[in-house]
Image (cartoon, rainbow, N blue to C red):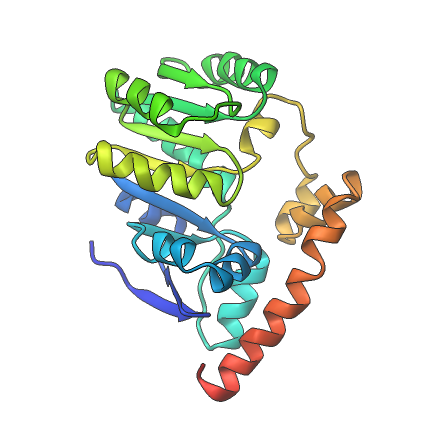
Length: 236
């Protein structure tokens, strides 16, 4: 299967459907792209290059889908948390192993417990919370356990940098940054009601529940749309 890429703000995004993305993702780094990440990449060349070198970049968030639509690309949103969950289910069915890195100690412990209950047969060969200072120590542990897929919940950009290092050491392993997914899977954070999911506005529900997110998200979203509109007009 070949990649079909579209450009937004000097970054390339895959146009796969959900099912195609699941089939395509086999090794390397998956980036679940949102407007905040695009904004950060515009200010940091190293981060931008990490995203550009990713083996799969999926549009995670209604903001990116809207931006692509403005530019004339009808690309479906792929929610990162759903993508990662499906990968875990797929890998369990075919007998492959899993590692989890990130979140608070109590969150990762509960996540592991819940995944073992909800995905019978899942083979979690290694897990560690997100409280560590040396990436290399964790990467060495991953090398020793040789998982087929690693999910990292370290937040952007830490998880993207970690995954980039990881794929250089474990070339046959799939690395996926999953943000706050462990908080949801552990039951620490309530999943958005179905109506919010259908309207692709889970972010709004999370912001209502955690108003501190407002200061981080809302300056970025309007500016992102303005930049995309400029790109539409000028091509830059």
